[in-house]
Length: 374
Ligand code: SF4
Ligand code: SF4
Image (cartoon, rainbow, N blue to C red; front, top):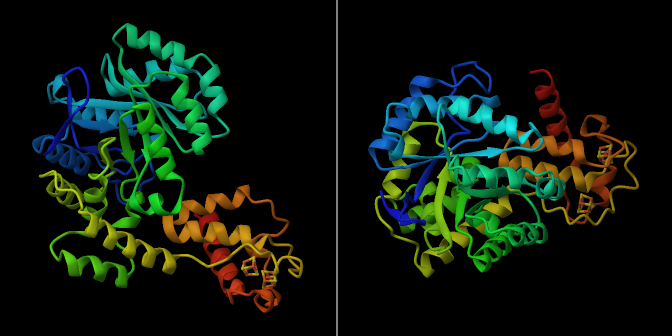
């Protein structure tokens, strides 16, 4: 395992264990963690030098913290660092959250503590409800060692948060896909400018960057037949100097073995390899997305009143990130839903991109019905 200096003489492993995708018991719900398989993963991590374990109040329906505490209990307390988070939406009472977390984890201090998933709509509450002062007090008492935040917000909001306070670290979604297709690069530059060490989440985008389209994979395999597709994502992240460590939410021991192997050295992609990866990324992106330009030529003629471009945006997210992205359908301002589509085809006639909208509506309707009936 390779390590990087943090501060106060602390060295953190460059790979951290995320605990929001732990193995679950067959047929079980989100909270039914398979302790035996999970323990095997943690034991492998500890045996191979991983010393950073990230969890949160809400992960696995509140059961992740309990698991992390139990799985690490047999190891000396100073041989690992625990990171967990206060989520204002899950429990606004920061004092109650913090005490519950100490109890769940079975510890008397939390090494890395974060305000969880700051968004454009929660930022003001996080900055003004008194939680920061409370956590600073806990830091003074030694109950928290380092205070940071995680975010899913715009660069403008991030600038506001980064300027608010002298944070010890920040956790952001960072991977080569988002670097090219979202505001991640700007977010990285803001944190770099503020000198805030970055803990990376979604290094492989919830596993979506572990397998690409066949043509994109062939390009990478041709260059390095012995590298896994996931390892390209981590080797690219090693190029970024502001990154302290990368989290991976590992579900299987094989994922852990592969990632530990990637972090057995400090090798970062060369400029040529980065170019190749970005080319594969473009190929992947082209194939997963529906090329809607949001011109809205199709919307006036839709008898079902469906906000077609907005629905297609959610469809793209679903193809990229999996079924959970369909939750985005709830936030769309649309009279009709995919289930209201009558397959008239009026949209296809109008579409300059020749998108088969009725087929997509049908696929979405089926998927949404399936999810409702679960
Ligand atoms: S096929 Fe469906 S989405 Fe397209 S115009 Fe007709 S009702 Fe609307
Ligand atoms: S006409 Fe085609 S490209 Fe334009 S908004 Fe509708 S689906 Fe998208």
